[in-house]
Image 1 (tube, one colour):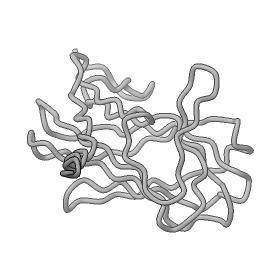
Image 2 (tube, helix red, strand yellow):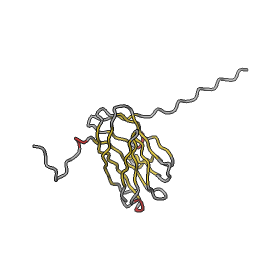
Image 3 (tube, one colour):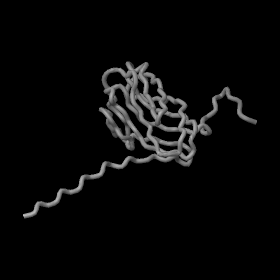
Image 4 (tube, helix red, strand yellow):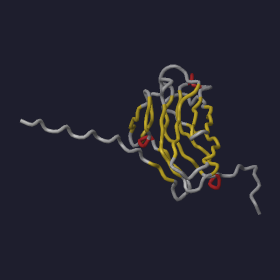
Length: 164
């Protein structure tokens, strides 16, 4: 009797490529990230969160494309433990990297937002990699959202004069 042929191996899951929205924003949702290390996708009510950042190998990566390259405000919404003061997240796109210094939010259920300016110089498909730097021991971070906001959407500060 002839043995049945082995089924072909399943192809690896295709990464989701995030596209720039009509508003100019790129929204990096936790559910579309490729996770490395101990990081886990957790659903809390209607929210998706990236939790269990606890090892040096932890990282989240997204594939994305922009129509209009240039400078973006990166907005990160996160919660940290009190000991996380001084920790940071490194954001890597291609050869460029920038570090956002995180503040303690007072607990993993108390969210806050920080922003940093980042250059996206290409319209080609590329990846955004986020990984911790200077992290405290144990589970110290919950990441709720990451957005690229184009500069023309930025709200002017009260002391900035509006153009005539």
